[in-house]
Length: 325
Figure 1 (tube, rainbow, N blue to C red):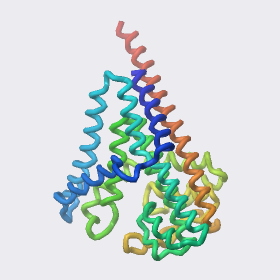
Figure 2: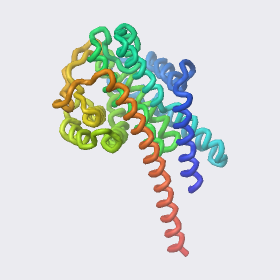
Figure 3: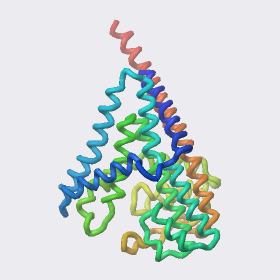
Figure 4: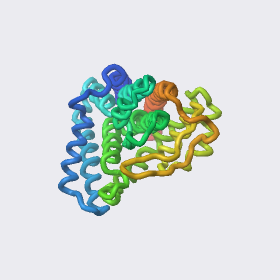
C-alpha cells in the first residue's frame, strides 16, 4: 500500500514535469485519438435523444476508464512500470503548458496590433466567434479561458488522479473531452450531449473549488479574489466556471463576464468583479503566471493528500491487526 501511494506521487510529479518540458504534441496526442474514437461512436449512436447521448457517454468515458484500470492492474506487481504508466497518463491529460502557450500567442498578436492573427489563434483556446471580437474583447476571452482551463486541464485532472490513480486521470479527461465535443447547447447536442455535460459538471466540481481556493492563495490580490468568488461565483451559468473565473478576476483586479458570442449564439452572462477595470493585453501574461502557480500548488496539494491518505490507511490497518490478535 505504501509503495502504491508513493509510486503514484512519483509518477504524477514526473508527468507534470513532462508537460512542462514537452507540452502537447501537434500530432498523435492520446486525447486527440480518444476524440476521434468518440466521434466514430457518436456517428453510430447519434439520435436527438438523451438516452442515446447517455449511452455514448457511458461507452466512451466508461470504456476509457475500464481500459486504464485493467492496464494499471496488469502492472500491479511491477512498481517501476506503474510509475511510468502514471507519469505517461499524467502527461497525457494535463494541458497547462499548451494553455499558456496558446494564450501567449494570442497576447503577442494583440500586443503588436495584429488582430487577424489573434482571431486565427483564439479558437485554440475557446469556442467563441473571433470575428465578432475586438482587441479588448479578445483579451477578456483569453483571461477567462485561462482561468476556466486551469481547472479543466490541470487541477481537475490532478484531483481525480489523486483520488483514483490512472483510471481517475483518464476518466476525468475523457469526460471533459466529451463535454467539449457534445456538451454545448446547439440544436444537435441539446439532448444528445446532456449526459456528458451533467457528468462534466459533477466531475469538475472538486477541481473548480480547489482552483478557486488556490487562486485566492496564489493571486496578487487575495482579498479581492476571495471577495469576487463569494459575491459572483454563483452567478455564472456554469457551476464550475463561475468560482474559477470570479476568483481569477478578483485576484488579477479585472472585470470578466458580460456579453459573448458562442457557437452562433449571443449570451449575456453576469459580470464578475464588476467594480474593476476590463482586462488589457498585459493581463494575459498575468493570468498565465497565476495559472502556473495554481497548477504547481495543486500538484503539491494532491500529491500530499494522496500520501496522507496512504499513511492514514496504513495506520488503520495496523490498528485493526492489533485488535484481531
